[in-house]
Length: 319
Image (tube, rainbow, N blue to C red):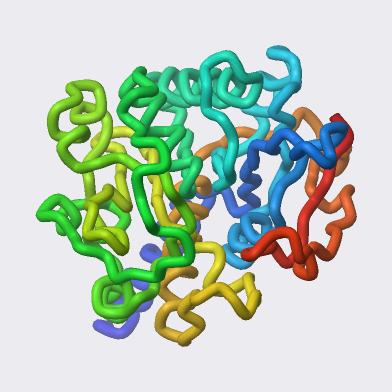
């Protein structure tokens, strides 16, 4: 009799599990904001392929979001994707640029959506971290320009007390935490940054973000390296978690150990899991198919001698 009861209980739990999984988006699509073409290629925008690979390895698909698209098209894309990633780069983040204006629009829409119960995650990497800090502070001066000696610098994270209660690190596996804090696992490629005092003193930053970790550059100058929204599903790293797996330049001192790669994959898995909580969809299967990154052919750029730290592949889009 007991075995029958347990069988019924197990079947009930299985059914319950299935019903919960029905509420999870098993086909997440993440938008990546394209960057304006550089001086030698002004007539096309681009996304570096490491970000596409990083998200794909965690079970998501990618849609490029043109930085210069019109507001109606931008709104359509926002309502079709399940989260947005702001990449690294070397752009001007001035409020007069089309790139900043488009990112600012998405930022405001994401805040509005989350307040209404539409769970919409954002992620920023390096330049994206700096962008999200500026947007949260509503102040460009919080970013210190060319203040750091941290190009091609791999470091362990110095966690703050708030990391223990964070969503992204609070429950992560011990092996991941060890790799993040004991190994030179996080690759830094930046000369701009934000100091911790700015997060403590700026009321807007303090209200929106927790500081989870800090680091110091070669001259022992401290910078914030990881943040998480207090209530919003917004995450950003000053370091590049996508490079450990997908960049192979010999001059770049990225940590290629299995432990570091698993730690960076954990960060991708976490963000993609967050996007699974969003139910946005394209209007049709045809619209979805036309929008995916698969419509574009990646170009091998790993042999670009003009760049000391070239990307392996790059996706280009007509402006």
